[in-house]
Image (cartoon, rainbow, N blue to C red; front, side):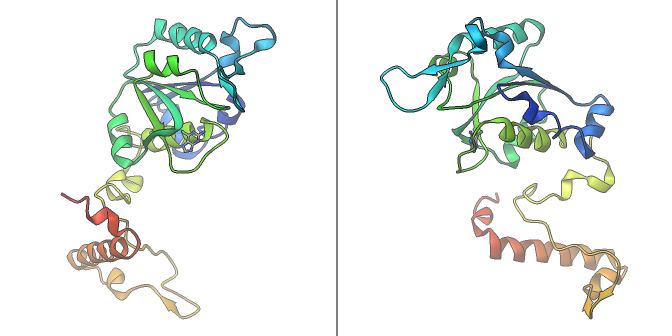
Length: 227
Ligand code: 6GU
């Protein structure tokens, strides 16, 4: 999969994909991430990419020409399955959307800044608008990093048995059960006996119970969604 990102602060996206599972996905050639600086696509003096909004009001708006220049220039080389605008008023991102996006070949992510982007870009170029939650970030870059991470790890071949996504929280609308590792006892706090029993059927049963219990306690809303 290739994910291209258009940003006015490309430096923000240098490190998130350089470590751990994202790094491995890139090293294996399964995931390619390219960050493009919007300022390289403007024809305005002093690399201007934003301007005052028509009608007045506080806050700058990202101009249409640099964005369209960037999008169309990238589209010459790549046919994107989705052109995604990251914005607090987009559709809230969740595991289901991550699963869907992980099956695509090419994605273009556009990071918003200031008061947003000229509405005409949204009307004519954007195919999907995503928010990562009900709070406001100063720009879409951190949201883009969240999406690349959660989508990237789901691409077949990125995770192995040890890191499998099948037992992730949310993957079956349940939270994950508690987990333990060595030592068996620390300051008198013991690991649940069942996990040391070697009885894999019982262990699996216990984990399912714990998942359900945890979900009931913490996220009862998720149980309404199970079909
Ligand atoms: Cl995608 N962008 C911004 N600026 N703020 C957000 C967001 C995105 N998602 C939640 N808050």
